[in-house]
Length: 547
Image (cartoon, rainbow, N blue to C red; front, side, top):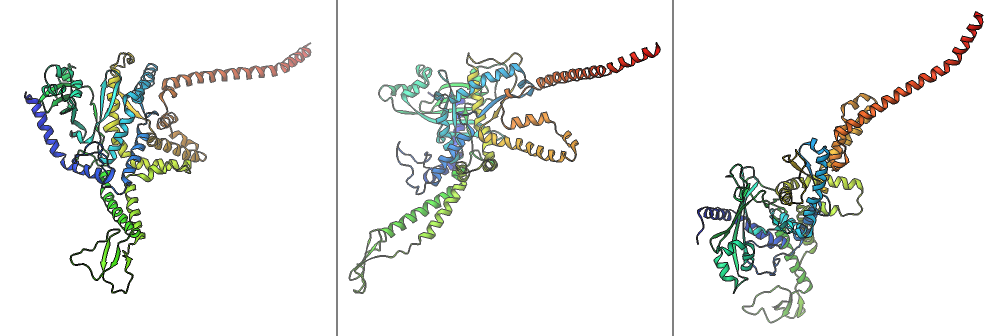
């Protein structure tokens, strides 16, 4: 069998991306070998083989685990509310029907991430370990008919990407292997149609034999208007069996099923650079220092010995390894056996190691992450530290939202909305746009700075108003209140709609007017009541005088 012309073009395109990634995978292999000890890109190892034989210092590997766990907790912790859904138009957010629908779908979307079957917690942990280490990671969100959205962290060694003119990842290749029985299970129709002859031949006698496959997803630029069939969706998808040279499956997606976050980008580059790459020179130096330090300690504890002889034996070499024996001629003037003084300066070596360790930890932002764990911190210190972490990590978090969290949420919404029990939007809001609002701890810290700025302005204006009360006219209290609420990530249901507030104020003003009128009538009646005795007395007196 041979591939179609279109499939051949896909394979040719992939081969160019393979060539583009050669230097990257060499760098990633160095990060694995000398820094974090996870993943292989150039080196081939059998499962379970030791990866960290070149790592003498675990500063980077420990920091990678710590930073990944902190990112997971701060950005997308499934045990807390880390995102919210709103209408793009504020007027719809204040509509009662719109509010009820949003309140109905939010628990459904959150459950898609929190249920154990989705694998979100475990797979995101793997993604957050790859992302800071190599600067790039990948997640595939599969539509499982039984459970809904299912998250699969894809090894970086399998991923090849390309970007559009805006730098967004719009082309993804994944080269992977499947055992024969797995391929028959993944492509049942192609297996029955005879599109996987080598897999079928191997299935009975060698079901565990592995075969190579290629998955290609890209933005569909040739869509026909008015059609929504599998081949005309916004994202096109094709699987290619590289060993059988066939196409076992071709379809499409409404949303990109791959999320490819990148830590930071250098101008003109497609793959990201994370702390693992940026601290690699320091970590390699740290490994070399520890190797030398350990050898010095071994010599100090178990030094080479100088042993008396008639002379250094012809052809013998000087060995200075621990426990080595060196034959020397002393003419009986020195002890026949004595240790060799190696002259190691351990304080200097220790200072150099600590200095390099500090630089590596700083590159992994360990000082910020560890500071949050200090139980002695006051509330003021926590706020200041949150602001500091916001300034340092906010660019990373912004890219994480664009490259990973947004595509994941859009993909999950697409999967869940197609289920029969998903609540339909209110009438007239079917085509209304939705937007994602992040309410994770670090997202809240970013937005709370705006709320804090408003509160600081309030405090300053109130101080000035004691001298010039008219300055309060500069502040729209309603707008400020809603900005503070949004900055503190207050749920939509807590705030009343603008129309509701206006209606309540109109009723209150009417009640106040009625109350004021009643008070005026009451005051008038009291005045009349006070005047009546005088009027009556005057009337009697006038009547008497007339008589």
